[in-house]
Image (cartoon, rainbow, N blue to C red):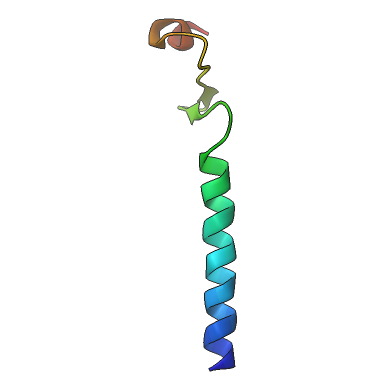
Amino acid sequence: MRRYATLLLAGTIAVSALATAAYAENPMVGGAAMYANKNIVENAVN
């Protein structure tokens, strides 16, 4: 039972770390940052 609890805790920490990266200030799309102050065309050019 202790091994299951440890595995569950490790999985929870891993998922929360990935979720934090998903809420980055400037999300990455295709390896480039998408800036909120630019439209889709301006983001594609830069």
